Amino acid sequence: MVQTVKTKVPAINIELPEVTIREVRLGSVTNFSGTAAELVELSQCGTLKDKGRAFSQSTGCGSGNAFCQLSGIRGVVVINHAPIGCASDFQSFDFINRVGLSDFGITDYNGRFYSTDLLEKNTIFGGIEKLKEAAREIFAREKPKAIFITTSCASGIIGDDVGAAADELSREFGIPVTPCICEGFRSKLWTSGFDAAFHSVLKGIVKPTRKKTNKVNIINFWGSRIFDDLLNELGYEAQYIVPYATYEELEYISEAAATIQICSTLGSYLGAALEQLYGVPEIKFAPAFGIKGTDRWMRELGRVLDREEQVEEIIERRHREIEPKLNEYREKLSGKRAYVTAGAAFGHSLSSLIQDLGMTLVGASVYHHDAFYDNGNTESDALANTVEMYGNIPNYRVCNKQIFEIVNVLNKIDVDILIARHPGIVVWGAKLGLPTFIMDDEQFAFGYKGILNYAEKILETLDTIEFTKNLQKHARMPYTKWWLEQSVDTFTIGGGSK
Image 1 (cartoon, rainbow, N blue to C red):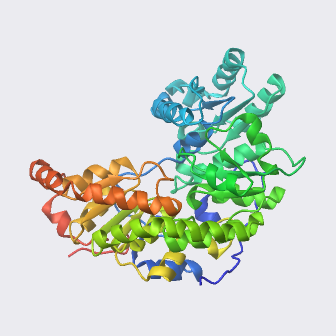
Image 2 (image 1 turned 90 degrees about the horizontal axis):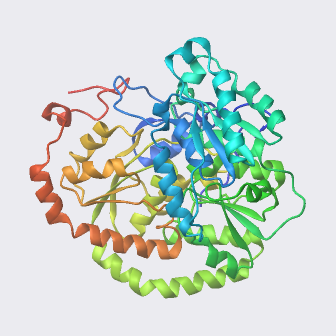
Image 3 (image 1 turned 180 degrees about the horizontal axis):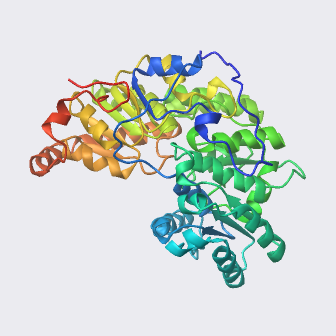
């Protein structure tokens, strides 16, 4: 068993105007090369240090991650205090929310997010008056129940006091107007944007508990409603947050019976905050991926919800139901070699699931790594649990979406299938002639049904080998032969080349 240890993490303080970034708060890193066991050991003993890069091809933006959570709240408006280029992903969030809400029977959704369209003259003379003018027009037009104002690199560099403007507008409108301090340059980890969004939700919407309910908070992205049946059977009701929730629902997430995270990378801050501030217990075990991981997670859920006997019955029943099909899949997939690219907690969790199918995990590239989570509990460490249950994993990298590094690694190891969490990675696997699939629904692999879902999808993807090999013949790779022969750590500060 992973030894349960409480790591000292700063307490959640929502009185602060902005959340402390992950590099400082959680010891998070964006560059590591070694094995999974080495990464776990360095994290647990407090000696994990980040490394720099002499060259970086791309990265993510914390402001975008904050916006992806806030934009899905129904009944509020989000104002992006930024140049218009920062609004380029508005249509994506609108589309995702429209599609996702259809699962909830909601078909009349329209995204209510705006940009202040900062221009060059605003960066010289200031953009606060433009922000106030825009907010007043938006309030008159939309009559929202709350407004969030997300910051940007531009507004941060020129020093616009968005907090003071938000306070003034809140008094004027009579509704919460809350700043979300999430400039892209604040943190090397775009996941700090999730924390910034949740900090703003806690400050601007969530109210103290009136009475406890039978609702269970599900901190998720935009996944399907897979928790409804399980929680209903246990006498509880799933409450999906933050995307798709209404303003009224978020007001009293403090009254929930528990909080579940589909991804610890996403929900670390909010889950810990709800427990520390309002006594809502967090399911601290690593998410339910793979049979062993799901068994552990289910038992912790039963303990927290006081449903231990019922949970044991469910575990026994689900094992019986899936065992015949699972054994069939394991026989077909035995010995197949997989490589994973995904966000931190997802990548760690998928590593368990893949090995539970009898496959060989030959490596992974996760986009960052948190040395610990906000709850300070090592049971939440999905990678430590994976290493304990299945053994060490070679070629384990922390690589913040540096495609040139991922291609370099894949070019040197024998892989049968590439499993990716984000769409931008998939094309590179195909260009290398690797059957590749994207896990777009983060809940697709969750729980007992999830392992069967994944096995079926992997088998379908492996059948595309002729197509991908043919595609490889006609694809042009932008990376030179020189680079593909170099050590993947060539541009790591402290690394070296041939």
